[in-house]
Image 1 (spheres, rainbow, N blue to C red):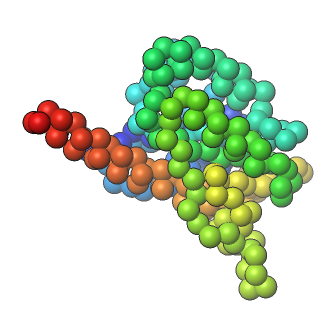
Image 2: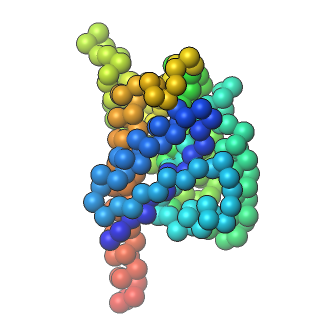
Image 3: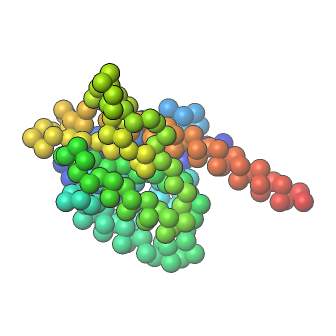
Length: 203
């Protein structure tokens, strides 16, 4: 059974785009998974159709001034018709990721905002199931989930370095782990739904 995962993101300077690529790479490592990266910079019919056909949508945005970017918020508010039209995204798998210049940068607030947005659409949220890294004397910045986030994947990019340098390798590996987990959960969800539908048909 083929699973369709869409990574839908906005990136202001390229750092979140690099994180998005890592998320997509992780999802693509799961067998029978089709992955598509889509930018939210332009909201057109093709974008809405792609999202409608997805089994899972992983949302990404930079964190600016403690919240999602204005471009991402424009997208969120533009989904009111999708929500109002019989909750078209109900029971799709959802997840989120974000990047900021500071280590904390209030990125958790952004992930909470994305999760609430997904919940309003009736989506099923998948978090990051990895122990927090870099929290012992033997840990390092090379650890997976070095920023200690479980609601979604976080990354940090120095404000004076471009996306060719940052986010760091461990943050990108963390993004890959999230993408892979979403794809795996999506396959489980699709198989479960198929069995349920078959049982209903023969009962």
